[in-house]
Length: 387
Image 1 (cartoon, one colour):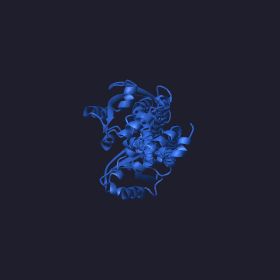
Image 2: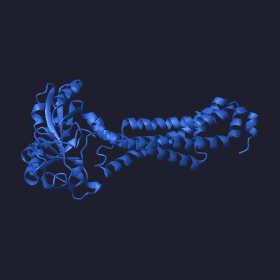
Image 3: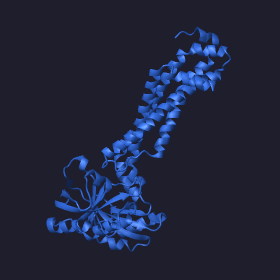
Image 4: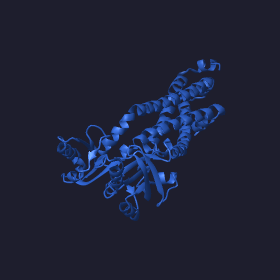
């Protein structure tokens, strides 16, 4: 109890220095947590991928379409329990600002939602969507951001697919949990296909990629090989892979940025260490004579070391706790400010553990040198110390 009392007294002996150190650690821990959350948010689509879904796209590039006729052929492959498809639709909603950018897909209205059970939609809204060819489904975050409700009209100006498109909101879906993207829009591929026949005269009869549901995730490799072998001599060869691998291919395009963010996050830990180590070295140097007096009273060198380590841990834990507390509202505000860029932005338990672990590790590391030096100094040498 006496040691704990001495530690608490030492922590706030220089109140301003301790408070500034705690504040600096809190800012660094918070910055580390936010950077780690950005990295995990960027990979959210990969982590949320289903092991039962395969994606089949054009073998040359994702931008090349596949024939609609592949659909019936894919359904006959052993191990396949469901087939749907989607097509990227760029277009402009309101204006070209990044704030109004979100994913828009032309999908097979009859089958798409069945293959994505993580998108929760009321049955009556799904039925309306299937019946109304110019209708669409939007995610809750998009609906909230644009004050949309069922029955409203959303107008898009096409670029890849020219023309003006009016979609009636038939439903608003929510994710089954916080890891599901709620910033997407889905509409009828058949509606787009008809428009291309009537307006442009090209681009009809093709889809962007196929979504294939399989009964056994362990058979994903063999089913993928069967699909690709079927079209090996076709003018539109396929590349079939797991949904996770498909998502990972997009994330890998920004791998350099993600690696840079990870490096910066660990550099921040180094900064925390330097800040706290500087504080502890200054404190230990100022108290050399006091430690010498404590030794004359019978305190051992290990007790002196415990005092310094305890003070360092107390400061680092306090700073880490404040940093953790600040991270959650800041991350929530960041996610709300950029919902379309980061559809899923939440601080994961693994990030919380890293933040807490690094705060403890830094506290221990910063106290190693001053505790070792102070515990070994002789009484005579300590009493002679000035400043």
